[in-house]
Length: 364
Image (tube, rainbow, N blue to C red):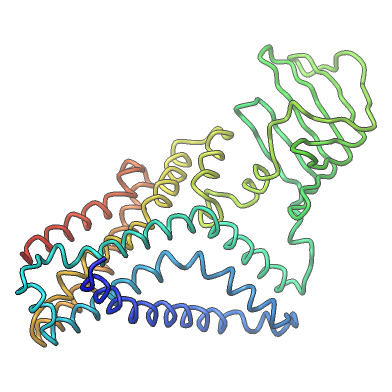
């Protein structure tokens, strides 16, 4: 790495760290004002409050990271421009594109990092904070971890479940009824008092089985087993928790893989299918905002003169909000089936990515 690259990165990282810390702090303070009453009423320990905000931050990165990057790029380049350092670098024969490579790489690495967090940590942490808040608002009531009368339909396996109680903490079921439908119209009904997930399998306690013909009449005798391994069941605790999270209404609680799994196991209406596919593609497209805002910030941050620098910074921030507004409009059109789901999610990214490249090219 050349010295000039190190210098540019150092010039960028200082304001970037300040921006990240500042926006994280603002986000926490704003949320704390909203939830302070609930924490005080529930006598929540300070350590738990700290843990809550540690878990809350990953799901907020999709907005904190891009705006921090944009402001840091604008500040760094405007500082270099006002001190004529950027002009001197270009006068030495280094092209503007070559100079901006370190900044673009930072935007790319941020996008990759946010994508990894958004797919792995963020959904689980967002759901944990949701359950934690519900528990605190109910004075620590553990019932928030228990789903009652949970229905689950696995269309792929022709199997439907009705679970009296499902404890999400230990993957334990109570009062279970499973209807296994066969191609000839017949059905096997399996009932159990309890179900536990052990060694990658469901184990049912006090199992009662009864076959029914295609007309719904009982066939054969009732069979009873005190304990049985349900090796034929492909459903996992994650499938039931996914059902509780409801990806249609709460896409922030599920990863893109969980959305696809939900689609595979459910027979959905065209509208519901479109909504889920838009949510799926949004999760893939959203992290690349970091790279896009970096590309947008470069030409505006390098505006020369005080007036030019002010107009450039104002223009870049305005474009940022236009970009997010377009994302919301495009997403809404996709969910209404007026745009293809993939196009709805990626169109704003593609348009502003191209715009950023064009503006940088014009700097030459």
